[in-house]
Length: 151
Image (cartoon, rainbow, N blue to C red):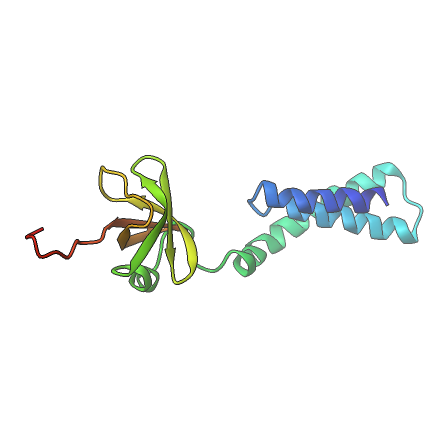
C-alpha cells in the first residue's frame, strides 16, 4: 500500500513540476506495489525493481507519451497555420495589458494571456488586434480607432 501511495503522490507531483519525468517514477512505484501484492519481496529488491522499472519506462516511453499529452509540435516554434489562425483577429481586453506584466484578452469566448506590442498599457474593455502568438500568449496592439475627427 505504501508503494501505491508513493506512486500516486509522484504522479500528482507531475502536475506541479511538469516535465513528464516524475510520472514514470510513479508508475515504477505502482509496479513495485503490484509485485508486493503477489510476492513477499525484500526492501532491497523493491528498491531495485523501482529504480529499474522507472528508468526503463522513462527511457522507452517518455518521447511517445509526451507526444500524446503535449502534442507533436515542438514547443516554442509555432507553425504557420497556428499563426494564421490568430493574426489579424479582433479581441477584447478583459484585464488591463501592462507592457511589462501583460494582461488578458478574450477571443471567441476563451481567455488568453496577452502582451502588447506598444509601450503604453491597454485598458480593460478596449479592442485589440492580434499580431502574433507565442505559446499560449497572444501578441496584441490597440485596434485602429475609427473616427471622423481625423484620428
